[in-house]
Length: 590
Ligand code: ADP
Ligand code: ASP
Ligand code: MG
Image (cartoon, rainbow, N blue to C red):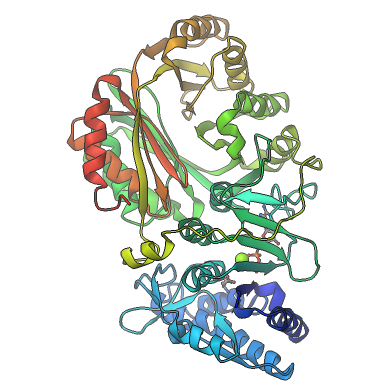
């Protein structure tokens, strides 16, 4: 018999009528011949209410007791849901995370799932029950209640779908699918019919709060197709799948991370290991770092800039202050009035010109880009907080995300092809949310060009990358450092064969725009470590830096995404770097 997991978010169970409506959906699926597992969130804003209650009692409540408190929200709604199903004349049993056997680690308020036993659920299903599982919670080794982090019911739902080998995982929420950007922020956002796991992973971690990003890690790892749809209408919704049917646009979605902060460490000695010190200290606090840019240092000194979430800024600054002293850097500064605007799309990997279209659109609106980083399927720019809304609108519109996509095909039924080795993976991985590395690779086909002291004014990036594109050169990685004294550094990688042509263009531009020196490396080595959980496991980049530093290799450029961390090192050291990374990740390679 087919098995369906249906997850209902807070707004979908906000009152008794909505609970009954959700119950009817489950009953309908049951009557249609499916076994049904419902995963339910706390009612409405109940979790927020519990959080504020705790804040009234204590400034710094113990994390264990927070979990004890927050888990009650879901306990209320599963009980009510089971009563609703029974009132409709069907059998139902509600279960807490502990009763299901969702084992997690002990990191309270952000616990990771280690294993789930499917036995009890399967027994109840086989006896004709609809099983109602509490979302967001688990239990640790000592039977303490844990929670998975805000929004974590999505992760419960996808994880249950994975262990039960469900045929479908439906996420019922208050929007009718995944939109090109948050429709509450930009009303002109459009629903997309299909999104790839990799795109959704990026979007979720960049601020598209419709899905908990760890739920997508599960979906990708275990091949669970996800169907996001409205609790309140029958609109077909959005499928999140491995390979969307040919959506041939470069950009699928845009996102703004409003609560971003920039930190710059000044005057770091440009030798192997300096960046490692900083980032390993921050990673040890479980803080995710993004937009790491190191400028090419004068006199052997470099500035390193990166962004963290604003809520992580105090801890980050403490860590930075400590390391600045230790590594003998000159100092540091920060800005918490910035926002990160990103565009994401699988199509970008095969199309040129995406970056300069984005830069041009922002330049025409006189929006200054404070920093740039790119990865294979994502371009992120940092702008001031004051300009974020406008920047998002402009970027959304330049990639025509506000117009009806011509190929917005109707949502097909979920593909049944499950990752063949999924169960094997479950068996092998002790922790279901452990880091998995798929591949470590070396690319020796590229060269680097850098323009130093570029005026930090709107339009410069647009101008540079338009001219480079005009010369027929395809750019891969782009970074623009945070400016100092009104000047920023810009570096990018290109195919080796295009180096002369590109240096010519860059030299002309540097003169025209009053920039500093143009430098280049005719041969660089780009190393990529790819897998699942690359950013949520905050120590991946650090492990790379550590391994390279130990081998005496200096990192020249970095970019990180949900599925990949890329570093650029000197061309002569490519093979040695590859060996160092293979050793460092030997235990996680699958
Ligand atoms: P639930 O309680 O059902 O889990 P959430 O509030 O967590 O619901 O997620 C749904 C909300 O996510 C929407 O109301 C919407 O404002 C927001 N959202 C952010 N980005 C997107 C996006 N790209 N597409 C759809 N919704 C988005
Ligand atoms: N109730 C929890 C929260 O509000 C979990 C969830 O809804 O996904 O964060
Ligand atoms: Mg949610």
